[in-house]
Length: 370
Picture 1 (spheres, rainbow, N blue to C red):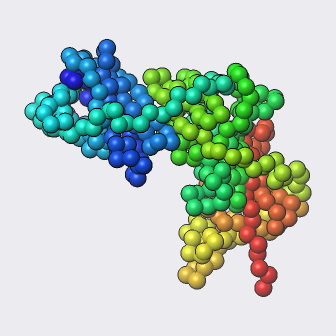
Picture 2 (tube, rainbow, N blue to C red):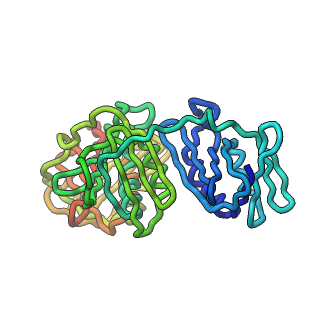
Picture 3 (cartoon, rainbow, N blue to C red):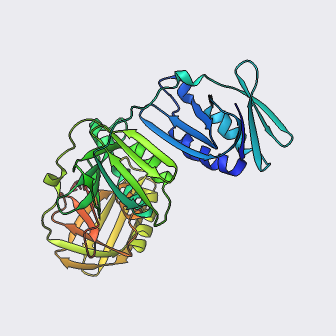
């Protein structure tokens, strides 16, 4: 195997595929980057056995071949190359020589025969969506997934749900909060729901760009594939039925408050400085006509904040884990947000002032009466 590639294109490609490398892979060879040079391109892929990311770049090839190079080392080494091009050539004793200008390196490689292949599954549903929209949808939901040690395994993923009205809903919940984000799409093939692991969703989001270019999403009963130009992300779906989240959506409210999101975030961040000293990050909120008072107490201090709001309905006092509210507000882009309440012990709903593009629920913390 002997070929050369542009250093900047190689580094860009490596930054994409190495997102699929695991810190604790099932097999040692999955620590590596699979390289294949044929025709006029270098094809690369990495996998952790549940997700695979692959891409390709142009290459000047003198001798075709395949190899698996050590992943992190190769990626870190290429970042230090200063010349425009890098040349790779098979050497002795399962080594590949790497030359760039005056830099000379040698890397041991694995035989590709031992590299596991991800099953090719025929997809039966697909849709196209703008990259920036899908990136936004993931960003605004994935943070609500349960952690690796929390709740049911199915809640460690994002539900991808298709409605009869032609909407794609992304839904995530962890037992304390729920996020739902909706966009109109044209689905081709069978309408099916899928639960995508949160890590896979993060990987997809990190590769997507804030552009209007479309990406294709295809689904089968077991896999999802995202195609972004020459880059593909293939991943296994989580097994099992997702929770019927519609049963926990609030159908009415007695209090509706409009808040300026930026001012609200600033006050929440200030209150968090004190609240984080307590185990449950408790912050109290007193919503009244025209004003919201925010207070936090701990053994080392106290904070009181207030902002102007527009309240319709009954005043209400309620408390939350402020981090849950902050996570939601920081992932909303709107200037103003509508908050809806029923009682001090029932969930708060955060929605757009107009429309239904997103929907959040956060559970309150019960206030002990002194």
